[in-house]
Amino acid sequence: MFDHSHNHWLVFASFLVAMMAGFTGLSLLKGASELTSRIRKARIALAAVAMGGGIWSMHFVAMLGMQLPTPFFYDPLTTMASALVAILVVGLALLILHFKARTNQTIIASGLLVGTGILVMHYLGMSGIRLVTPVYSAVGIGISVVASVCLSVAAILLAYRSRTHRNIVLGTVGFGIAVFAVHFFAMAGTHFLPVPDPAADGLLISNEALAIGVA
Image (cartoon, rainbow, N blue to C red; front, side, top):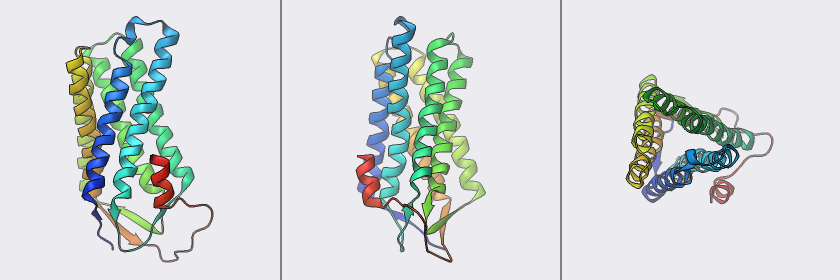
């Protein structure tokens, strides 16, 4: 079983990516409820790409910084699917926030959706690793679920209790912490096993190619 370590500069970069994504998405939606339905939907689509894509990018920037004593690569279909899931789930959460009455219930429901998107993106993205097999601990999964739900709900509450610049900044920090913390809580409970037969069929994404894609 392999233990892993991380490049601290890329860990820091992954946090900045999450913060940038949160700020971009939340800023795009400031005042969106006053726009026409068509323009609001377009803004929501852009914000979903920013925030959902930011969840994906944060994860893979951090994964680029992961160091194992053996080579590993990524399955392209699974990797792209994980990005799409994050974008769609975040988009659904934003639709609820901007097309339903903004009550505590809708804010919490949206936060739960964002937390779900973070979790699904992480574990689906991890399932795309090839040449090694991730092994998860029950404790690591449990902590990740609780952290994702609680931190995501808190981030949406901070951002949407009041739609001021201050709330956008607070929501950005909350979103960045949620995405970052869930990833590393999950990784703390993850180890890797070598694949008995390392031969891999089909196209694989190297770390170098993935870095270009994330950039």
